[in-house]
Image 1 (cartoon, helix red, strand yellow):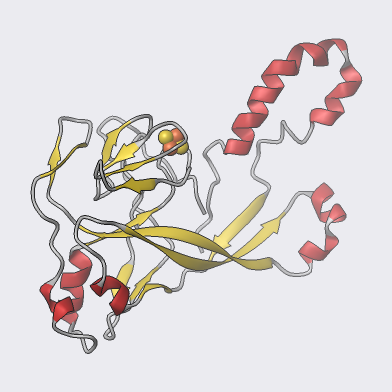
Image 2 (cartoon, protein in one colour):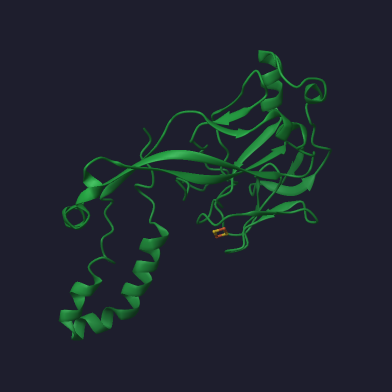
Length: 243
Ligand code: FES
């Protein structure tokens, strides 16, 4: 199973560093206070989160039929997760959690849309300008089930399957129909309909799900896994700030 979020500084750590910096002077003059900060300065990964590697349902054939070209729609998918926390103090405090690995599901928002021809711009990815109409596969208007392998591949090839988490620090992005762009409310990250980087602090475009399949009845399934290649030349690869 994939192990997630090992290396990047988490948002919790990031906030922790800020708190630490702000009150470091006080620690020097008030040593007994330091023990209060001990949870803040733990930056090593002490646990593990494993996401079920199996297929999870995203949308029915009717959902795909009603997906309008040029208008992304958001769908919910549930991923079963197992977690374990290996810090001794925590294990003593939460002994129940160690009887077996904690299991639960998390809900992810996934944006689906039909791919559009987009004007690219220098090394910054997308210019955000849509050069033509996104194409919805014609077969979806002709059949409701019994899709052949080639028909399924055709549908999949025209579909954007994007994570809702911004590629900067993971805030949920939202589609603005008037601007034809996704906007992240946290720091103003912008993306085109295909998830390409348009502007703001994100180091790359939106994360897309790399393992997807359409079944014979037209239902869309995905596995938990993203493309983690850098979208903008010169920017290093970054694991998604999502699980
Ligand atoms: S988290 Fe989206 S721009 Fe910062």
